[in-house]
Each structure stands twice: as C-alpha cells, then as structure tokens.
Image 1 (cartoon, rainbow, N blue to C red):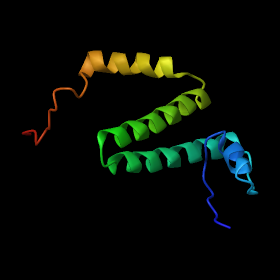
Image 2 (cartoon, rainbow, N blue to C red):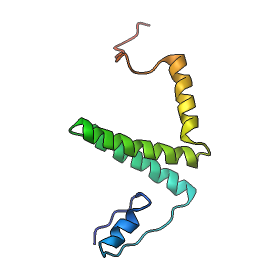
Image 3 (cartoon, helix red, strand yellow):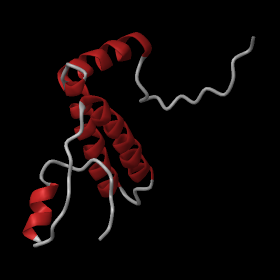
Image 4 (cartoon, one colour):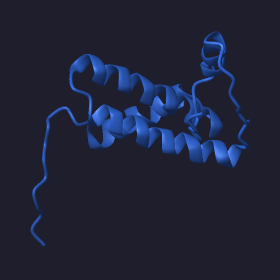
Length: 107
C-alpha cells in the first residue's frame, strides 16, 4: 500500500472509493493545514516549472490558484482581497509584463 502523507483535493477520497480501494485520511488542524498548503504550493510550483507545454502549464497554474483561494480563506480573507492587494501593488510598483531583468545597481 503506497503512503502519500500529503494534502489532497476534497473529492480524492470519493475518487479512491469509486475504484474499490480502501484508504486512511485525517483532518488537519489549522496550523498543520497551513503548513501542508504551503508544501503543496511548492509541489505545484515545481510541476508548473516542469510543464512541457502551455496546456500543462495552465493546468498547474489552476492548481496554484486553487491553493491561493484556500490560503486566502485560512488567513481570514478571500481571493478578491488578494486581487485587490495585487492591483494596488501593480499600480505602485508595476507588474512583470515588460520582462525587465535587473542585472545590477551601482552603489
């Protein structure tokens, strides 16, 4: 029996049940949940970085966005607040659309 010890999407137990397999899960407390969400972000970011094409990249970005929704909720907010903060930062400091790569700054 493979051991996973990782956060999974809410419907994964249903998917496993539909295959006739048995499994064991636990419910995380808030601190454990935040820790596992952060770990999952790294996992999904790595999968995005390794995506071989645009289609796979979008799939992984969707996973990262789902994690961002969960993280915003656990921190007492929602994705619209995250978007509002993102927009404020973009207005103040810009985005990343111009592809500017800073090499160095003279002291």
